Amino acid sequence: MAGAPSICPTLVYEDAKAAIRTLKDAFGFTEVSVYEGEDGSVLHAELAHGNGMVMLGSRKSEGLFAEAMAGGGPAGIYVVVEDVDAHHARAAGQGVEILMPPTDQDYGSRDYMARDAEGNVWSFGTYAPGAGS
Image (tube, rainbow, N blue to C red; front, side, top):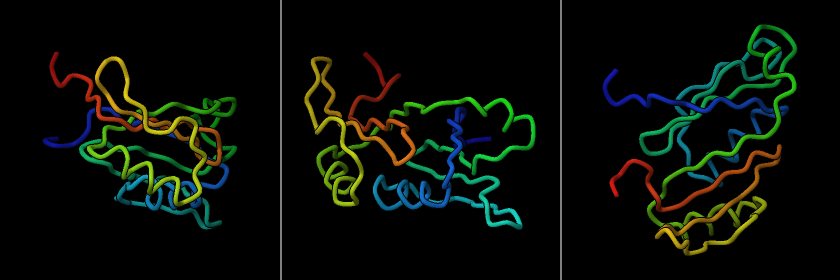
């Protein structure tokens, strides 16, 4: 599938709808799709940022994936952004917990780090893995 990401982190949340709002409002993701169950839980959601994507859903107690993720803890996700300072200001303005403000790194990147409401650590920076030496 041309243009589709070949790797998509998948996260589970107690409050997937709140996570979707944070990803959109604070981190600038675009909602691609959201499928809800009859009970209003998020069965599956896809959100895009640049040429990458994350998938997420509500933590639930049925199914093989739910069983495998039952003991899963927070994840760490890195997202490439062009303007780290503007991205940081947007996230901070939405009340996201900032773990590290925008910082110039020895390897040439400018990064900041945030934690979402359920403990996942999101890093945003200018370093683009695989973009060349």
